[in-house]
Length: 153
View 1: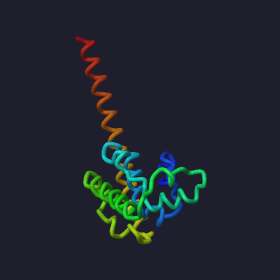
View 2: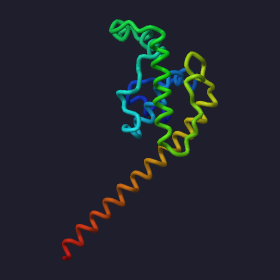
View 3: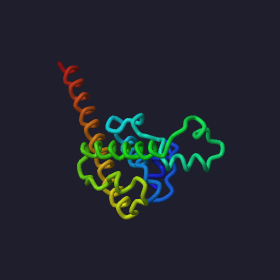
View 4: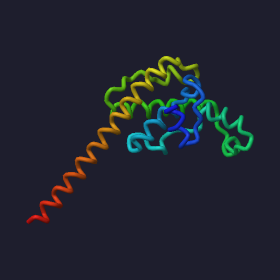
């Protein structure tokens, strides 16, 4: 449900823990949602084979007519998403590097690997969110203290 809620902000469906994660977009969107500087939305590749299949199912979509994209480009974009993911993971603590494009692109991802990785990712992102909120609270109290000390002078 966590993945579905976050990805709904970006209109990317999450149907399962296998094919939905095959192009790396969902992993990148989860990271972007919590740390937009770490994974800029503009760097996430949306023209992937999974997005192409979703667009084919959506008859009202104008996705296919906008550009002629080859399967090689889909694969390159998917690999780019996983490279972006792994580069961003270097900046997170507590998330093991266990997701590689070679295990996902053009294959059916292992559901257990995806769930395990998401568990680590969720724990890390939520802990970092708490840390950031704590830091903001400390800064706010410090500024308030400094403000009060100036008034007393």
